[in-house]
Image 1 (cartoon, rainbow, N blue to C red):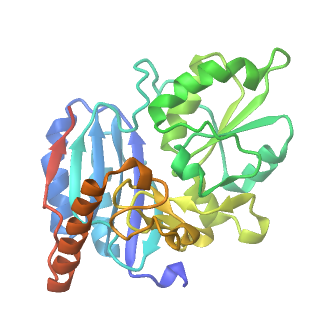
Image 2 (image 1 turned 60 degrees about the vertical axis):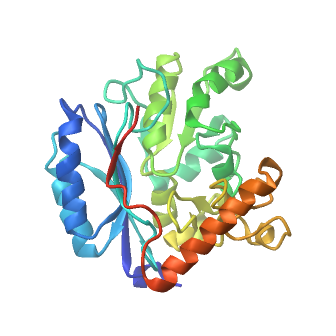
Length: 317
């Protein structure tokens, strides 16, 4: 399947910029998305905007025009891909404390950040034996694909990353000459904070992949790639491969983890109900509830209606 021929435009975006009143931006942004039939999730915080949206080419262009008109967003970082069908059920614009949650209050990517490395130059950096390569994503993301030589912190949440580094610092960095550290994530936003965090911790030679894995998979031919597997994405495509073509993984709607084709063939996998990773974590009563929810979703789909509640915007505590 050629990605360029798929009808839905998907835009992953973020921008660190200080919003004086991010709450005031919520309703107009939601209205702009609804007017264009665009769906997905956008996060607004005092530090900027982050999210992924999908729709027609014209609809996405109109919403991006609106976002670029927000304070400090003229140079918005956007990564485009395509999908065969709308990968989101609804549109959400949420207010958050952080647009990517690390939980370290003093970290400011606008003040200090690592050195950006273009996808074309990434292979040379991570192939260097003196470079420490760290995957900053969550454990379930790393499980379906990562770069050669990358260290997996095995974190369940990005909030766990600072504690992991502090516990592993001496083992990672040693006592000799300070090494080069190269970090990467899906679209680049987590590395804005992880590299800023490393620099605040006194690590000077810190680098990160500009545009993240998505930009690398878009720009670097498969025959030249050091990427292994697929890249998890936070929408109904579940994963993408080189050229950003939709991948082979499904999503477990009970635990939200990706499920490989091999796992889909296991008896613990039931669409909409369970997967091998979460089967032992749920009770029969819970699975019965998931099974009924899945049945209702299928009935709604047959009627051409959305079963998912039309929550328009939410505010996090």
